[in-house]
Image 1 (tube, rainbow, N blue to C red):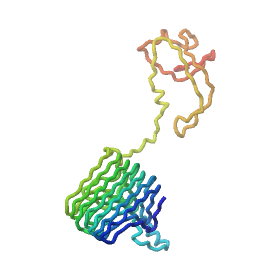
Image 2 (cartoon, rainbow, N blue to C red; image 1 turned 180 degrees about the vertical axis):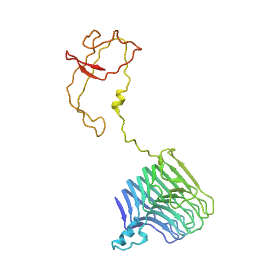
Image 3 (cartoon, rainbow, N blue to C red; image 1 turned 180 degrees about the horizontal axis):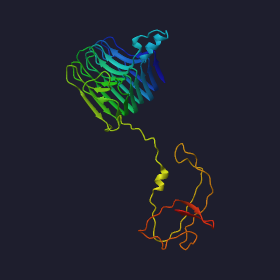
Image 4 (tube, rainbow, N blue to C red; image 1 turned 90 degrees about the horizontal axis):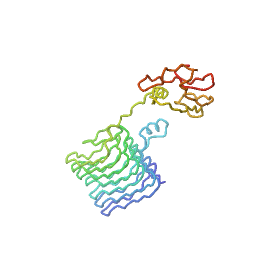
Length: 337
């Protein structure tokens, strides 16, 4: 596990016309917390480097909870610097050099509390971001993925964002965005492949509260957003409450239809006794009682009232209501005893 915490940084920046260095991380788990950052930047004509992260278990990028600052002051800890709020993996061009690229592969990626993955620029084209996530991309409380250009209201086209994740989930109305925007240049390209996308939608312009996927431009042309995902609109925000009354299985069995035939048939009825689970949660366990064989009543029996003739198809069906004991000790199914 690699953890970068409390404003710690891993960087490979350049300040001249030389290319910035590359950063390659191969870890089980990567955690960037409370301002922890991994970045490569350029401020002149040299291009920013490339960041490659291969985490076999998970990546978590989480800034400091904004509520922490008020709590810190309340308990006399003091106010933290605002720079410690954000944690990020980023490549950035603040000059004329090209922005770098970010490649991340992991089973699970969590961006929360201002956790960001950025490939931005101030005046040139934004960088490229490629995320290969086997299971889940989770975005919470201003988690951001951005390849925005022209952050200083200058030129440059938005970068490209490619996301392949089994599921993408963003908690509602927490301003977690995926953007490839521009100022005067053309918006970038966003390509997403997922089996299910929940809580975030493609929009022409980003809002301050909702979770947005945008490739817009303030002055120039908008970019393209291509989302390949099954239509799950019918199940989003559509969880219904289950009825409190459970199904009465006894009533279903009592009202079931029993097939009968004209010819006499011999059969058996078995009482298994207790020892299993209750019929429904909360019911008492089944009672213990003796078991025995149930014999059909012979047509010639004089111990019980019988019909004048054997039952035939078309005659009314009378359901048995209980098990009764004959004077000879035999048990029979009957309507009344």
